[in-house]
Image (cartoon, rainbow, N blue to C red; front, side, top):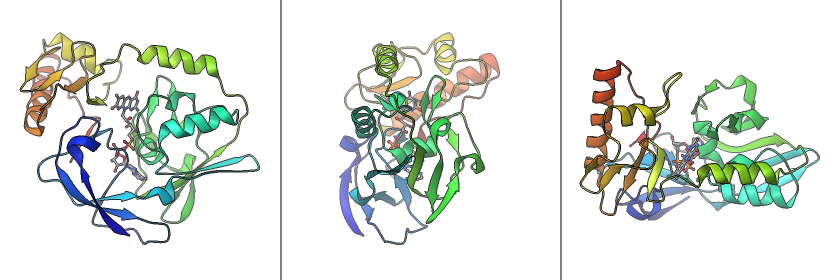
Length: 258
Ligand SMILES: Cc1cc2nc3c(=O)[nH]c(=O)nc-3n(C[C@H](O)[C@H](O)[C@H](O)COP(=O)(O)OP(=O)(O)OC[C@H]3O[C@@H](n4cnc5c(N)ncnc54)[C@H](O)[C@@H]3O)c2cc1C
């Protein structure tokens, strides 16, 4: 293992944070228990006083095929998974396109688009050196109880990369905000949409400093340049408070506040 300085104002997708010394885990290292693991930082909001971080090194950015099993390392970026499965005509990973992050982050969040979620196609995950079947892991909408760090995952190979599905999903994303964000800030409450609720309480487009609830998609907290953690938290708390007062609904953050 070794330390690497990562500047979260550049590395995180929402461009908030500061430089931190991150412990890089290499193959064969035992994984510390007192550090928070980050993947691609596409779902994080980093405070000025974050916990100590660690990250899986490129030793875990692997992808191998054996028989009908595809094994992918948790540090593998989603974009490379899509290009690999396209090249090898493998079905099921089309939805990972334009879903920024690493496989590890996808597993921990049960990331997905519409009805497509990573757990739907997952066979098993390697956690603490043991393979655990996906069906034995508690999971749901944007949540999975991994209990510890996932280093690899296995998928049963199904042939037939679906370019039409990929194109349809890309089209769906074409109206998303282009400014830096961490994707959806809140999970959708049952039978409703966080974006609709934020808009209904008059916060679509609301700005504090350089942070804003996007005019295009109200559940996207965007950074217009010099947005700070403090401004982001102000807008998050404001939305939660207004939605609770108006609709008696408690919005739950999808982004991880660290
Ligand atoms: C523009 C934009 C659009 C987005 N659209 C979507 C969308 O449509 N659907 C969706 O689901 N998400 C979406 N997101 C959120 C994000 O893409 C996903 O949550 C993604 O899976 C995060 O991956 P990451 O590697 O960046 O994880 P990080 O943000 O670094 O971490 C997220 C969580 O995963 C945990 N984690 C990371 N790696 C591991 C591991 N190896 N083992 C255990 N835990 C781990 C972290 O501890 C943290 O709790 C979007 C984000 C952006 C910026």
